[in-house]
Image 1 (tube, rainbow, N blue to C red):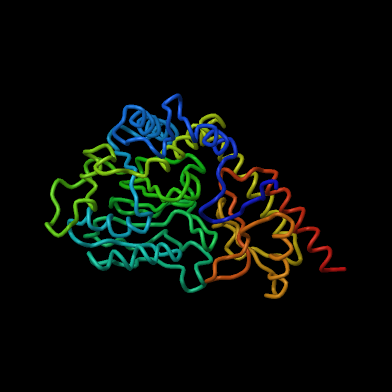
Image 2: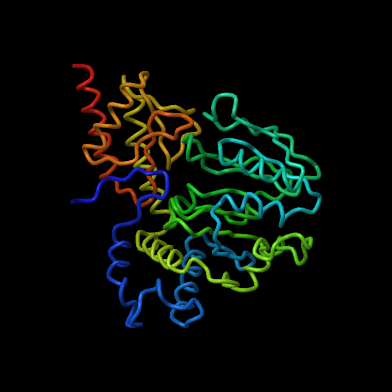
Length: 361
């Protein structure tokens, strides 16, 4: 059976070249006589894997030396707690709530600090990014938190809020590595791997060194302290070894594509293919404000639930998987991360056009 076009929001499609290379190395990684799955994380062979992965990520994102890169577990959801626990000084944090994950981060932080919702787009089911021109930042806020790209709703930040000098923290789970960023504009970036980085099970944190506290209250678990992981090269305990290995291969694949400048051009072109069709379609329509459209997650629907259901059923039969929208919003969602080839988006648009013509006839 040939591979399908997988539009899943995560775990998501991985580069085919990466999967083939990993398959070839599954039983015997570079004459070690064993799989990466089996080897000790304390071995020299594995040390080379994690060191190279970090070096390649630093190259891709131009991460300065005074930022630490941590490979962790627990998903982005664990960071909803780790961020406020580690960054609390005044025990106040501001949140711009633009989707379900930003809302969950806001709610979780409220268990440890005073969490302020300073802007939100919940009034129209998170279909836009709020106007942040004159957003009021709390004078005693330890940081301002955003979710850079909203996977469920298909919106993204195209510019950052003025944080009035406060630390900017960003959940980049569904957009990291899709385009160049200036890491120095953030105090902390975190991202679950299962969209653009690699397989589920690994989380990456990029944090400015001076934000890592030397001491935290006694009640904070050792594993919840950034210092623990920063001082031990992400290997205080056994890390997600195979996940990191695959993330490293994705980093190398991106470098081979020409880096983030090159992949950004491809991502813009892929998104344009789908959005241009949606804008002229009489059947399908996008669900978010045009100026805030995500490059990674394209959400759309028709005016009839039964037509949506028919489309999803026929799309699956045609080899297009995981196009169903999130249960909270319905409709359809095409996640077109880095590893989704242009041909996949072209094929989807052709199928949508044919489906629309059949509906009309």
